[in-house]
Length: 265
Image (cartoon, rainbow, N blue to C red):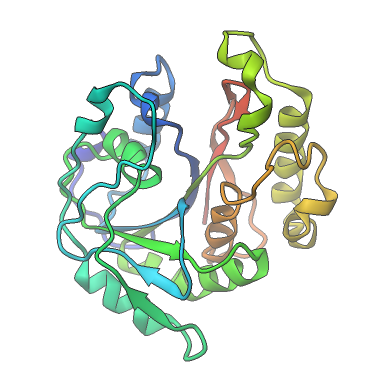
């Protein structure tokens, strides 16, 4: 099991993953991919999650006691609202996040629980729920600002903190209705955006990535709203080896949407 490893000191990667809907836990292949990824990484001492589903200004930290879950999804079978993830809180991590932020980046705190962008992948990757978890909001959706926040967080990786951006590489839900009925493959806009992003990540082309709204093929279909791409910039900012190519750990499509995930050194 991926959560059987002892906590390992030293540098953790920064990751960006597609978190899926609650039904991810019943998928035939994706959970195994996430579990294998977690097993291949050093076991974190704590995890800081930046989810597409929490935008709040100023930068805000969630519950530092054992965090409740936020069932921020609608219309699913009742059993998905019974899911539990009783992880410890992370008050020490909250203090470290506040300490690394500059004076012009105020940090607030709220007793907010973990939304599905956090707890759904964690249920699969670390099912023992023994690792302290802290969720952090995105104060805005500006790529350069989120990247700068990630730069501030980068030293935490040397303290055994896994920095996790949780979103979706493409998220054009209004435009994939045909795929919900079982149509195979993925629409061209989803594939084009995914492959463009891979190319820019491998080249370390931050200028293009920051301007993805205007430069990326497949827009605005790939991201009619951009909150699911935005956590990627926190992940890239947290890289301690700027310009190093990401390691792509998961690829392919789910309901026509790119579920590509990666880690950076």
